[in-house]
Amino acid sequence: MTGPERRVALVTGAGRGIGRASAIALSAAGSPVVLAARSVAELDSAVDEVAAAGGDVAAIECDLTDRAQSTTLVERAAELLGPIDILVNNAGIGSSADPRPLADYRDAFWDETLELNLTAPYLLSKAALPHMREQQWGRIVTIASINGRVPSPHSGAYVASKHGVIGLMRVLALEHAAEGITVNCVNPGPVHTRVNDARIAYDAARLGRDVKEYERGLTPIGGRLEPEDIAPMVVYLASDEARMITGQAYNVDGGVNMA
Ligand code: NAD
Image (cartoon, rainbow, N blue to C red; front, side, top):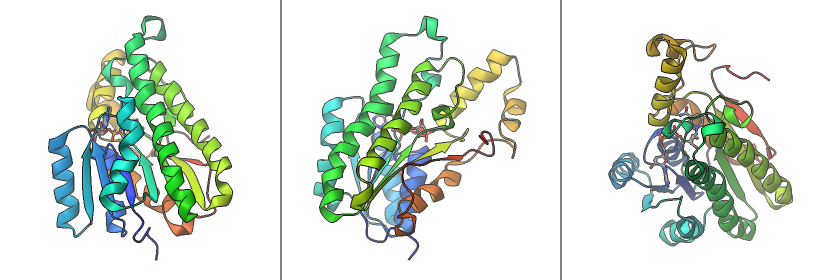
């Protein structure tokens, strides 16, 4: 088998974008999936899509900027579909919600970004580890960013959170390497989703460029990625076959960052 057959997956931010595509792909590979996100309408539509394809699926509405909800999400998910084998830390806030130079940064936006992009993966991973240690099998896949490797202007909290989460996941990888648990990151480049639409509109305006022309030049391969370009890497890292891969952060970015 190539997929994570019958391994229960919890995917955060699964209502749309990369999280939704990853949840659909994990389900297609055989995993029961718990979808967690803020928007009920998007969750409902994602559940319908997975169920229509024959997948075993449940949903939890949650706001992961609320620490109490991040702390209890894994247990709530396990009550629905069983112990969590695969955790996909995907929910994240981009810089586009309030892009500014660091000198003008809003402290509240700093806190919100770090809470969702760094603290929530910390709390969720900590809560999922007992399930994984119990069965001596587990996969944590965190959606970081190429901004976890290289900076962009006007995105201090985002860049710091993504650099931070890669470091955090490497520590977890080291601490649980001998327990059948692997921990890796995927670093997307510019992906055609709502947060990235806002970011490229901001950058094109900042640089005085036409947004369509700017978009075409964003990657050496050309244009932006789609969420479905990220999902196969998530499925692979969650599979049995990837058992010897841990502590890595793979760029899936159309060739933006070749370092
Ligand atoms: P998106 O905005 O399309 O989807 C975000 C999802 O997260 C939605 O389902 C939303 O409900 C959920 N979410 C947002 N805030 C939440 C909260 N407080 N609590 C719970 N759920 C919440 O985003 P996307 O572009 O698919 O991004 C997903 C991940 O990929 C993020 O971590 C992002 O930083 C990362 N990423 C995206 C890009 C890109 O270009 N789109 C590039 C690199 C990394």
